[in-house]
Length: 120
Image 1 (cartoon, helix red, strand yellow):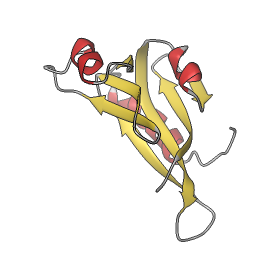
Image 2 (cartoon, one colour; image 1 turned 120 degrees about the horizontal axis):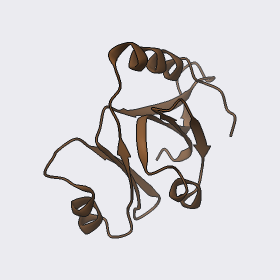
Image 3 (cartoon, one colour; image 1 turned 90 degrees about the vertical axis):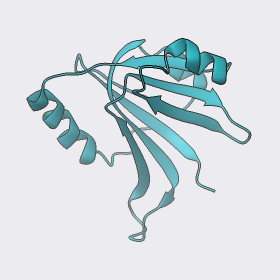
């Protein structure tokens, strides 16, 4: 089963944060997330490119403990407030997303989709 090795978060203010641990997630800014990439320990069929999962366009993002590893989630359901997430996942660390204009988001997404660096 694939395991998340690291993640990178892009914020509306232009900052980026890279991490691997719950402690690093906890100290992320609480508001302003545009995109998150999860980098996995498995490779695509080319043997070079890591599998990635892109989380974007949500009002809330969270990290919580799972049976074997962390759970990374997102939601834009207005019924699922941060309080709802924390009730469902008691140890969840919830961060808020933010919307930006289309040109700014397109520029960020182009950077995200080209990001295969293993800075971590």
